Image 1 (spheres, rainbow, N blue to C red):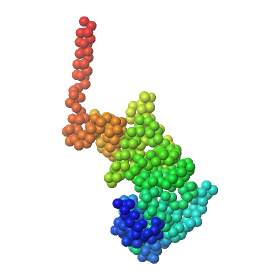
Image 2 (cartoon, rainbow, N blue to C red):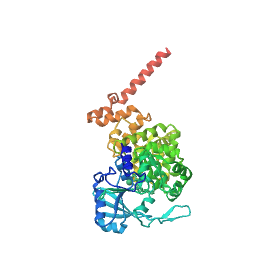
Image 3 (cartoon, helix red, strand yellow):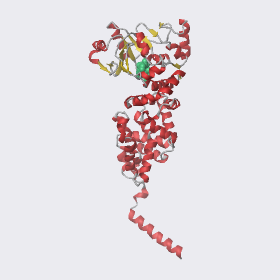
Image 4 (cartoon, rainbow, N blue to C red):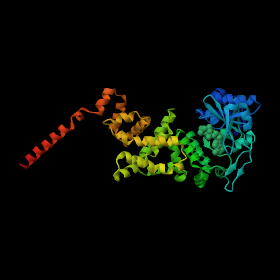
Length: 444
Ligand code: ATP
Ligand code: MG
């Protein structure tokens, strides 16, 4: 279907690299945009500027996919954009200023067209990128051809300066310019290549693959927070499993982030099955538009390492809960700064892990206390996932499922089964008596 739509476009223009398509040549309509995106472009137009929907949103709409967000590109400078949107806008970004515009609950990201001149260091890395340019120069500064289409919802024209439609049609991820130079300018583009090709089901062109294999080590110098940001996008891109296979295939070093290193450990061990299950289930949830918590997925990806450490601590004589607390410290706390993760996510992961040994206890007063904890639900879901992968007791998982649905009377019975209501003293006395009789019988 998608292929046919784009083929039709290419036939109608009779040009493999059309530069400008009118509404009769493409299937994109302004009612496919969010109200916020449309309003943002309209206001910039009314103020006398050029403004386009650009990047992933145009690509996704042409592929009949739901865009994750809407980005706008304009010839207005950041200060001019602020004059249009006033208090509803904020300038962010160090190397290149970006303006965030708040419309209702939505944030639209506006960038000013980038120019051709920028400052590189001796390794080819972009150090400063603050010159402004035209739509054409802006297109050349984007990463892949499929990300460089400009749609003007007012005139309903699409501008393609880089042969993007042809590459989308052939489902190929093609770099704008020379991959080696572009990866040296910004190594994160290598991880973007893996994510976008997996998510869109595009073939990565051979020159990109070769350049990644030679330059992947450059990612080691990237700040942990930037890599973490990309990892969370990979987890939520609907093809996380494929992303992780591709990262390995393209030789992305595991030491670019502790998450990759720990997940790789799991792959070598019994944790492999659990890791696969987690990623596949996450992909299914994203594809069904169900919510996914990154903290939950990460807790699962790193679980086998945490569990391994806990077992070692138990073997050294610690009870399960303190052994878990120590394991968490061993895996995460000691080098928290290397993770570049928001604290909120780390503490959610810690909570999920911390409650796992407590979920093993299904008698007495503790289960009720556990049920009232704010992280109970996430910890229980995690236990269920473990049980499904034979990593935790299926009976206990079922017990917790029943316990949550049970009335208070039923809960009481589940926590204090009748045989345990018998006073301990009587029980002991009976047992001792029996033993004596037995012994006597045996000896006689
Ligand atoms: P999605 O939003 O679906 O994850 P996207 O392609 O829209 O994918 P964004 O991170 O939203 O990704 O970026 C918007 C656009 O900005 C991209 O389509 C691309 O044109 C450009 N872009 C983003 N990151 C880079 C980069 N590192 N180098 C060059 N261009 C980039
Ligand atoms: Mg986007």
